[in-house]
Length: 220
Image (tube, rainbow, N blue to C red; front, top):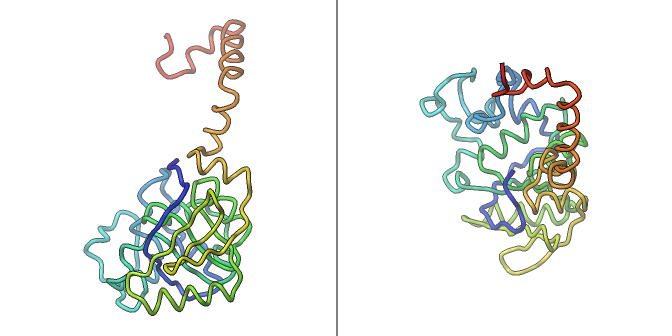
């Protein structure tokens, strides 16, 4: 997982409330058994004029010119600005995967659905919760200024606007430390328990040597 300490990027204003996970990554793309390749299908039903299916070459599909991500000034955005209850709906982990693989590093909104929030932090997508008055001000900046950028500083837990104004935000401390170190759940386990795991596996194989055949590269 990529480390996130401080990031400055162009802001894409998605002015919609209650954006559900089926809008973020439609259900037909959940058939894949892999964790990669979802970026081109982020917001697929809004982003393209045709119906997307797995395996399609998205570079040849007709774009919806009215959707915000397709507007030239927002195509290189890495911070998504949204309205309340972002990520509601089903609990699919593919939603944060799609956002990350498109290129988003952070999402700023007044509120997030609980399961989406948990899935995102476990995958290194930084979700920042700010009050609606601040969100309104950021929307005005993003929609009214081409190339509008914000800085999300996870170390200091502040969002910094172009004029230097800083707005603090709350963030789960355990996940904050993990994201700044680039550790997902597996990485967290290995970083603190690797010796205990090695000792357990060595003891288990000593007691049950036939299990070596279940390991890749194990003796036949």
